[in-house]
Amino acid sequence: MTDLADRIAACRACAEDFAATRTAHAPRPVVWFSPAPRIRIIGQAPGKRVHESGRPFDDASGERLRDWMGIGRDVFYDRTRIAITPMAFCFPGYDRRGSDLPPPRRCAALWADAVDAALGPVPLTLLVGAHAQRHHLGTRGALTETVRAWRRHAPAVFPLPHPSWRNTAWLRKNPWFETELLPVLRRRVAEELAADQKGQARWR
Image (tube, rainbow, N blue to C red; front, side, top):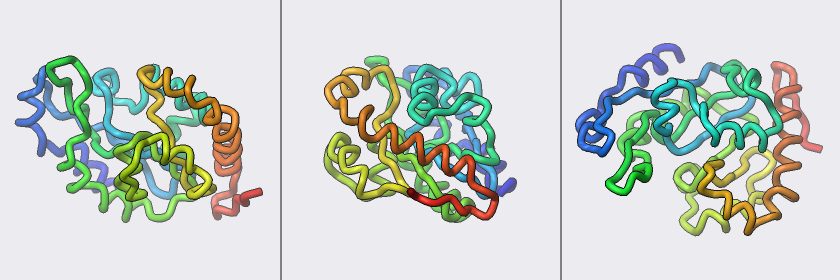
């Protein structure tokens, strides 16, 4: 596990691509996992602030995600309990309009299978954003359709929208997310965090 994390941290496969973006930055993989987590968060890719801090979801999106989960920063950043493994470990940069570029497919091709194998089965996985949902669920429809069908994947997997401020309008248009999905998600998070090391959490 340590060897894998070190190899990911040392990866520079996208250096030329990142140098050609508007931000012209160097790769800085943000690696945040350890063996046998209770919860796994699979997002899209680090943003610029995370690229600078080296800590995943160290921004307003992270604050919203932690609120959705019902936990604080101390628990969220406990690698023995929560693994954060995005579809791309590096900030992909901005396009000409100043928007985040999508996660480079090269990153998932290089590392996704190895990370899946290293972590093994995880009791609770959060798929944050369409890129993670397409890769892990094989969905091809709109994100709203995937998230609305969350009961098909619970209690082990919860598809979520990205917690970015850009999705505030989506949250207003879909109040069921807060009233129906989030209470169940928070209960599942609490169950897994309270479970013993043998993984005996029960879905009630």
